Image (cartoon, rainbow, N blue to C red; front, side, top):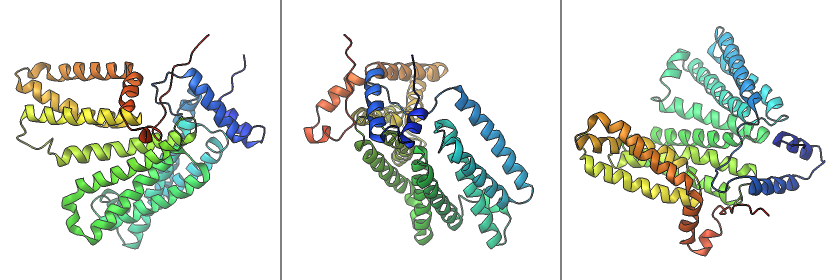
Length: 352
């Protein structure tokens, strides 16, 4: 029996042997036929060779950056950017390997940050390491470096179309915008949680736009949406719980647990409706903290963490086992116009 992988299908489409729309239709059919309906799939590995190549890349890029850094910080950044782009020409553009492409996108962005931090340091006649370590506190430096990273990722996106690049580009663009706002309106530092929440919601809206363009989740658009959701979820969750004072001192354990569990249930409903689990994962630390505090207040500090893990783990496993019927019920309560734009509800394949 002959098996064709994603790399071979992409190569056939690039060579003109198959039409791109035929490849997408074939993947959609295979996805409906093979996959369990409640799986949130995205391309990461085609085999252990991807892991082997990724490890080799990390070793090579670390060595290249370290050796170049012996000369200058600027050269280290340029070396990492150049090496990452060159490797991506083969492993991303030609071989279409997902995990190595993610590694190269990360190292490319890190190289861009190092390069422009060094440029700023030289322009301001400061030590490279000072600019790098003080980056988060210096709003102009943060704006300039994150802005340069956004432009670098825009070029990377136009060339390689790696799904995770869209998330990196959006995050660095958001950081640059927030730094710019704080430069001109210093008082905004007191409202950062609200700004982070607004930024997270903007990323969430962008992710939903990609999701709605591929309701069957059969093309790379669903991978792009996955990474955008993964970027948006921590921003939304952390900002929301911070604004509600979840970690504020003196919180009543019962009120804290009720608040966190209530919000988590709302997030669970949202996750079911859009068929994305990123927000549930991002909020886990808050739920574990709140329920642990509740169990400690009830007089069982020695078992608080274990009991919390048992309760949360059991609940998530149960939800995972019945994700599809639960989602089908939840989505069925929504208006038809809204159901028409949400990710489709997969049905289990029927066998003769």
